Image 1 (cartoon, rainbow, N blue to C red):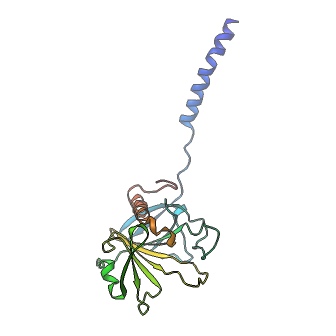
Image 2: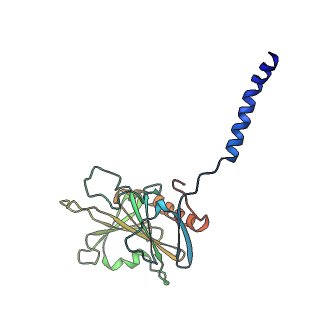
Length: 221
């Protein structure tokens, strides 16, 4: 009887060590599938959940899809922004990123680059951005320019001006900035303009992670 009691007393300890052994030697889950790109002399690796593969692959371009504002992967969601007035917000949260080699010559500051096409009035908009209206006879008629003070060096975006009456077509903003030898273009819904600093920081983190860490796993902050 005493032996039976001793055996039962050791049973929880044995079970604990068995569980630890199983945990230690249990095979780790496979890493997320990754795609590797060589662009502008840099090697970049992205988890496949970020990558949007077009019908025709262009060697000097990488297309990614993320969700605002945290940049979780979104390549599996419908590849479009929603039409004005749609009840489904999944499309509105999509941000499309395009990476390409940056021009060798650094461009002028956005306020200077677009200056000849801008109306003189300036307004303070979402997130402290400065809003400038493009002239109707300019190549950017129907758009507004949003600049991080003072001249848009930190962030700028061209956004389609809402049409009155609404035509039912989606509106979007286009921002771009350089990251070393890369040019990143970011297309997003105007609803996210107020979060411009977060979008800018998350875009930099995504690209830097692809350079330094090899693969950015879905859901990493």
